Length: 157
Image 1 (cartoon, rainbow, N blue to C red):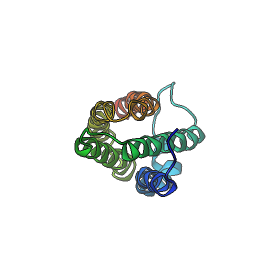
Image 2 (cartoon, rainbow, N blue to C red; image 1 turned 60 degrees about the vertical axis):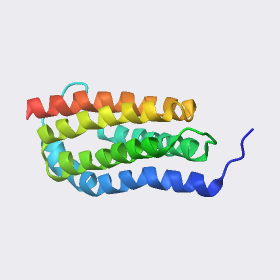
Image 3 (cartoon, rainbow, N blue to C red; image 1 turned 135 degrees about the vertical axis):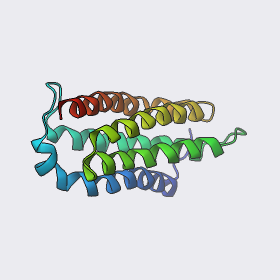
Image 4 (tube, one colour; image 1 turned 45 degrees about the horizontal axis):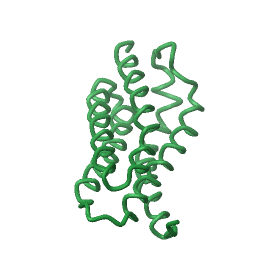
């Protein structure tokens, strides 16, 4: 059994939750005002659902990064880190665009790029640590749902 490196685990979680912190700066002030006033599709979950879901997802994202970082492998990790960094930046950017700039259609473009980068991250994580790729599956599924929600909001408004 592998030993857990607490410093690496905390750092990995901090990296993941940095995207949450950046995104929340644009999201939180706009939920009770701009977002509340938008027409939303029938499948839009209540606002309280998003916080717990994203907390779980950022935790899984951080653990996934930790598994790759701590993996002992001859496989280069450079592309895995690059893909991970790009997808995490797109994750934060989406909140800034959708909520901060209040641009749902531009958000569609960002979230589609995010989907592509999550898939590429999973592909890069796979040969290093398969479990790390598996941990990103719930994130991918939620972002697929969020993409549908984003497109529906853009169409309705």
